[in-house]
Structures are given as C-alpha cells and as structure tokens.
Image 1: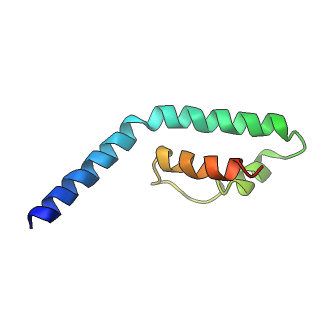
Image 2: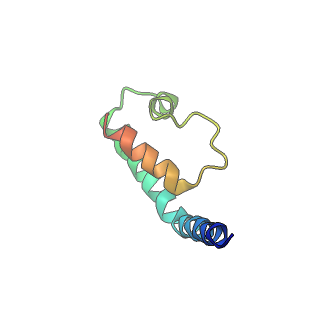
Length: 77
C-alpha cells in the first residue's frame, strides 16, 4: 500500500513538472517548426505537420512529450 502511495506522489510530481514546463516547451515547438519551414520552403505547412506526426489528435498530450517526440522526428529531416 505504501508503495502505491509513493508511486502516486511520484506521478503527481511528474505531471506538475510537465505543467511548469508547458510554455517553454510550446515556444521550443514553434522554434523547431520555424526552422523546418525555413529549411524546407518547398513543403506546405500541413505536409510538415504530417511528416512530424503532428497531424493526429493529441489533445491531452503534454507539450513536454510533444516536444520530445518532435525533436526525435525533426532530427531526421
């Protein structure tokens, strides 16, 4: 039982940390998109979103997680 309470607290702390980093992550996502748009002017914006797997419904995904996934995919472009 104590392990479950500790795990719940750890999860709560992780979520709170992600919320604190939300705005910074959002701005970094915009910077990465800006960089890709400038490097690949031949691509349409929706093409970029599709290539980066950002065209899916990720309403509940935290920005920190989106940023991590985006960084991995952006390296391949």
